[in-house]
Image 1: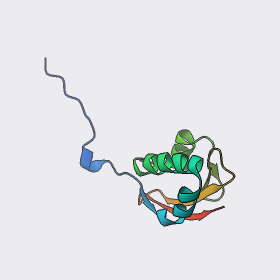
Image 2 (image 1 turned 120 degrees about the vertical axis):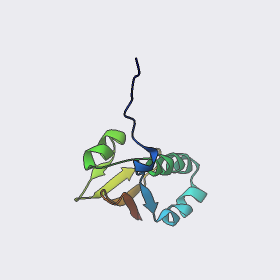
Image 3 (image 1 turned 45 degrees about the vertical axis):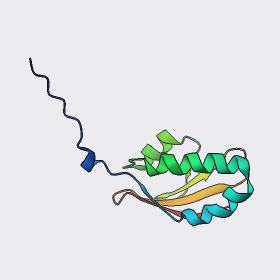
Length: 99
């Protein structure tokens, strides 16, 4: 018997594009624990396929949604947070600040 699997075509999977990574460079250069977390976070975000705000909350339970499309990610072992705005339909996340 032939079994057919309906896997999504790889061309149809849209990953998140991260804009504004240069805003992280100073912190990455000066804080070792932040560097480890930020490198992992950037990798996870670049491979994310978020369609709704709940997708972000499931992947990052510590992330806080402030306004529609705005999220704050506390950096582990650091007193800083990364703020991003997400355009879900376009698959774009923009780093709006580091506080």
